Length: 101
Image (cartoon, rainbow, N blue to C red; front, side):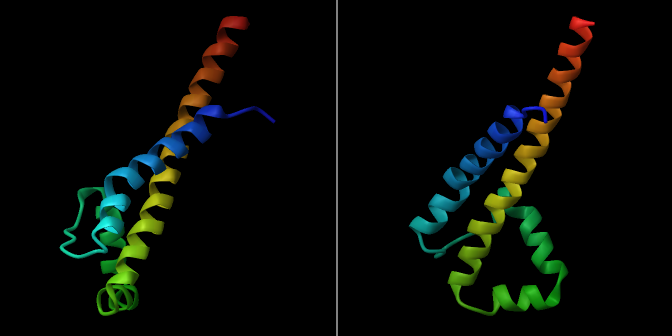
């Protein structure tokens, strides 16, 4: 099984970036005065697309919104970082193979 360090690094870096830029301020202010961050627009589009999810998040407590953004956004950006890292791993692997052949 090939090692994929960039996949793990990419996931960790984007998850940490989301935590630092979106989650930490959100938790610090407990969701009060929260505006829709462009970082979390894909999550907003997701929950507004499904009426039951929209009702659950928007008509509940602020805690639901904070948890959804905190957990869902971090997972979303970790997955994006993993995909980007995997692409770099694949590219580096192909370049390394072409130089050894």
